[in-house]
Amino acid sequence: MAEAFARAYGTDVLEAESAGLQPARRVSRRTRAVLRERGVPTTGQFAKALDEVHLGRFDLVVNLTVFELPDGVKLPVRDWPVGDPSRKQITLYQQTADKIEHMVQELIEELRWLRGNWAVPNVQPVLLAPPRPLYALRQRAASCPQM
Image 1 (cartoon, rainbow, N blue to C red):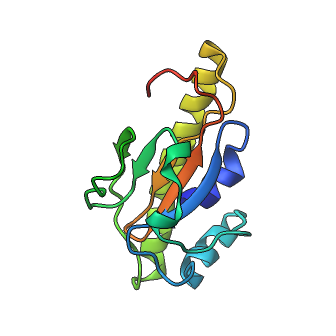
Image 2: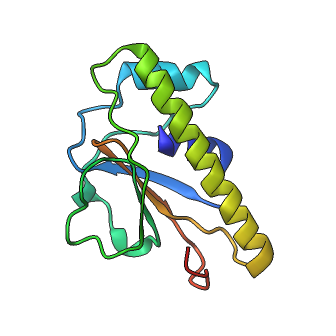
Image 3: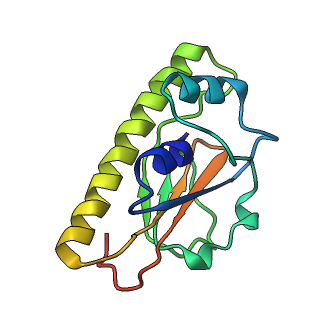
């Protein structure tokens, strides 16, 4: 969900990519349905493992899981433990989407503020989503102040 929201709302300041600690085989139908209800496309999204993502090109990890990240993740981390709605009722997916959407929008606004005040072009962090997907958002500029 975080990747889809980031792509829908923040392409001027970030670029989303997803992976996971224990990835599902695919993006769930319920996740796609909740995003479709909000007019948020999921085109190009697919499940993949954390080890399939080259973390060296990222600047920030946002961990949406309740789990610790592997020791190999040597990036700044923000924890947004929203929980995993998998195999739950659609209302839990909707509540989870509300939380993630709000947090992603706040991050996008923060990145826009940083870009406007620090002349930082296209800051793009990394996101981990509940507990399956990891969302990675790249930074194009190395001159970004610490977040």
